Length: 522
Image 1 (cartoon, rainbow, N blue to C red):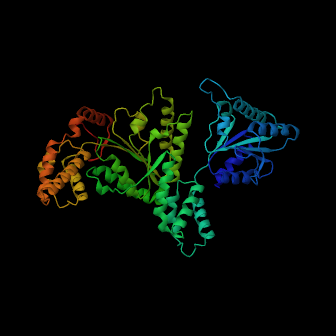
Image 2 (spheres, helix red, strand yellow):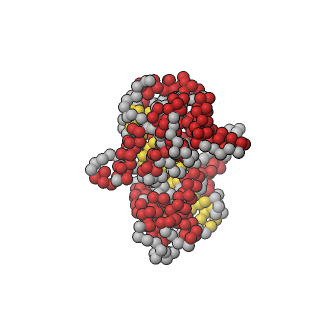
């Protein structure tokens, strides 16, 4: 267990905290923490499955309801005042008092809430009363009457040192020292960051069961299972990053900027010794379909780090404080997985309610900005937005992101480069885009160009199988020209929105992703 967690828990005990809440699903690990700090004497456990339980042996002592358990030890305290610890596990449904559809309040839950409230008050004001309540649950939300008496112990993700100890322990216990090479630990560690000790144990067990040993070659398998675990959290998604900067046509200034940041990230230790600031992130605003998402994926590949995608909509919870808690948890996962790239797609939709009547979103926005301002971890944030109209001014000022780039519709040269990227994907890299094709695709975005290439390939294929004619490069070029002429580009279908966006780019003085200069309306 991390020393900082142990010290924080010990401090809570020392200052007579009435109720200590520990949100975690690895109960065995929390038991070890409690034993480390207060021992096993005078520690009494209750859980819904076995009732009153021997904390040390886990044997059921009495099938007693929670209110009876609390009554017993409070009365005992009056007769025999000693330091006592009541460990209540999985009691979320017992302490969360909510009215039913007809306004009915469960009298048992009301009694339990009042019992805990009285215990907390006596713990604070009666020096002879020494009972501390420790609530351990996978999810904790206390009613307001109890919350003011509670302190929450944050269970952080394992440090590099702890992960290394877990790997070494598995290698030693399973006698894999001969097959496990000296550098294998360092190769496996990045794949295990951002997981709990329990999850790391599972990952290593699964890796060993797949081939009977543990080596650095298990990294890809561990990453696949890590994806599932991150996805199950419902807060983040671990995204594949097969893209590279070469797969992006245009945006040369942005690509050069990211290449410089990559050198700092990959040599972060040396950079920090020279007092170089840890890169915070980049904000990319621009036309839809112009490669912003592709840029986020290519950046993670360039940095050689995992790409975590945050969906702000999935942060929203139905209980008071749940949404903010979800955001904090997602950021904790990202920081534990550092170095990594955290991609927030369509951030303007997430914070559209800021400053209005949406207090929850305003608080989440404030927390996010504070984290961006103060963060020192190597989590590189890439935020992308399609609509720059409603961006809060706080998001655009220096100190949050290192730089803000805007992506306009591609120029002639950029459209040529985009065509070449897609030609290469289709095995047509020998074909050079004609001047007429570039002219006919003015106002097209990257998605429009990809659609033209795909439709041309499809048309040539159908002509070949229907007319038994082998597809020539000349046929492909002809199809490209014809399809480009009849395609309605985004500059026509969304003309009003794009014109408004260009005005916003100019007013906000965003850097152009192509030239690196301040954007001017065209």
